[in-house]
Image 1 (cartoon, rainbow, N blue to C red):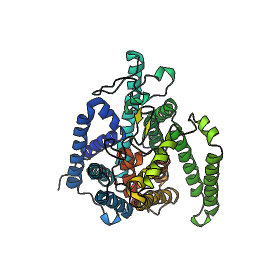
Image 2 (cartoon, rainbow, N blue to C red; image 1 turned 90 degrees about the vertical axis):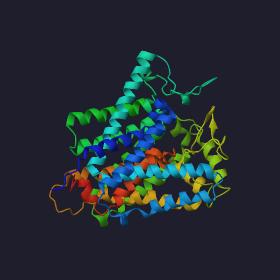
Image 3 (tube, helix red, strand yellow; image 1 turned 120 degrees about the horizontal axis):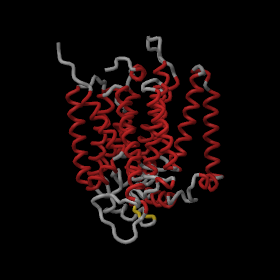
Image 4 (tube, one colour; image 1 turned 135 degrees about the horizontal axis):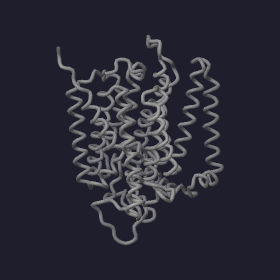
Length: 437
């Protein structure tokens, strides 16, 4: 009989991949760019090795065409890029990140995927708590990243941790950002709650980690994450409502959803100052309006094809040099994924990117609300687990309105994984765990 390959190595490697893309700033602050680069090279080599050695049983005809089209547009944009060298680097990084995402998407079962994501999130939250405790109790002052030197007045955004744990926060954790740490806590809350409700973890352990995620949300107090949390809650309520209705009887639900969305838009426009005050934000969304204005003006100069793909902005080339500077900090993103796509690959790229995101949301919705005919009696695990793609997609979509992380590192990896897995013909059976390895 042929030897059965152990599933432990790919699971451990997948955990490392998730940890690295979710908490890349931890490696950069701890080991510097050279150390982070070494880990990134290891991940790329490992992803290719597992894709080759595991020979996943995957029908590549089901690969999302919108994902392939977007990668193609980003790649060929080097031909008209205003900064071809920077574009070449950005395109290479986009493809390498996609390789890591494809390893996770096609080499793991859904059960393994959720488990490794949960383990990576537990490590990030646990290390963040320990790190902030050490900084606040034993060091007693703000901490800067290793391997860098700053002179003059140092902006608050440059610190790894400001040591505010004992003051009630906000805290930055090992990822050096309250917004990112808060969003990771939101992802953790979604994953941990689904695992707990589906009975995939021991009850006591599940309750503990759900509580940790909630506490982390409070300690970060990120306004963008608060909005994302509200969006996830609304999506969950709508999905649970839809499950109680027959497919042909969901018109009232969809009309209610459209009305709620319209009311939210009107509320944001008409009462933006009040709402921003409640969320602890200034009227200009902490400088985002200025950044958006600059990006829109620049994108309007090349509206159809854009300036060329680059992913994270590179500050040493025009037009990114000095494009978004606030309080001494030069930001390397548009703080809106959709504006960033328009800026880099124009209206054509924006349409394709929209198709990628919305088709993933569409498939996730119907996986969440339609009970499949799986030929099994007990679908309790499915009914809970099938909510996970929808809730993760909604969280990413909500974050994309105030951050551009959907285009790089963790955001891109999760988007690719969700797009590929939900497109799989056997997606429903996979969510249930049929054929679990």
